[in-house]
Image (cartoon, rainbow, N blue to C red; front, side, top):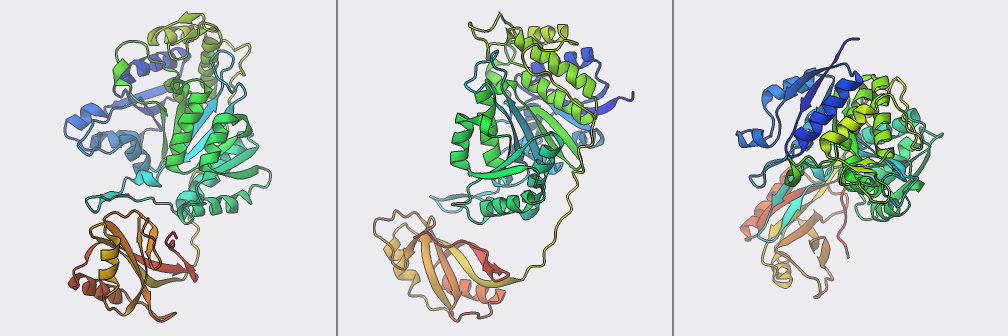
Length: 478
């Protein structure tokens, strides 16, 4: 059997310890791997690489079939961007798969029947990291949802359910408030769900859905959601299973896959031989399944289940009532290796089959759309005195109609209320005075010139468009 080339990073904090144990297990189980080790994370940041990864390491990752990564540390301050996010987006790893499975009664949990897979969009949403400070009081983060991004992850979720015998896919969004961005996610979910009539589907608003997940996870099967929501609820799912230290995750796309534990580098316990390596071990199992080495994956997974079942536990899951032996990181690995070839007696044995996971290639669906420029929102910096600002701006004569002024999304003109708390960040919406009048880009530039000449401090603009005659912008809250 040819060996599968994989990139490997030992990470920071507890990363090297749990990676050493994981590699010992992979070797003992007979995994056919050709390992290409790279350095990423804290040391690389401190060596002057702002991304936390050297250029040559990208070449290694791209040339290998998979990437097994231990947790890393991002230095505080200095504006360093998350390397995890950088790898996922740069390599197009658009789907994050996080199984959350109960090990009851051997790991304490209030949810003995939990078996949920959370599929998280991995490339966009608030994780683009596009942020600005626009005024002394106002900071902004840009949330980006795209139709291709929504289509890719939602179709993947249904394909995953189809390939793995799952019965239902649930969408989490916040489209009762974010009607355009999250509204798109929900709308695309409904469109794609219609292509899989054999799979049940439903939708929950993210807040009550998260509460329901924490209270009754057995009512969910596969959950698909946007990037930030997915990050939050997958940690909730892992924790209510028993411990975040147990969970591994897959990041997958058209051009490769990365496998990692879901927890961080925990530098406060590094070098103490107390970390639970199960998350990275589970990630390695997922990697072996991806590579088609299913027999080795089953052997390791079942040995892990046997170890947990027989009460050999690290400190994070140790319980006097259930556990028989408290062990450190290295001894947990040794205990697992001793149980290779065994099958659990109470926990459900792992079983994997070689199968075609289906194409991960996205076929972009271009839809003819008529786009029309109809106005502009102009954001201005001014002292947070609503009456003074309204008095100034409403007196400026332009060829446009000042539709409203808002502050943090709440309308203060016309018909504002004195109780509304304002900050130094105002939005003015300008529309043509005549209905259906044609708006040209140069008209908007001329409008801004007039406002600037009148002493307005413009900090940002957003052009307003209709798409097939439907507005592509939100309205001010009353």
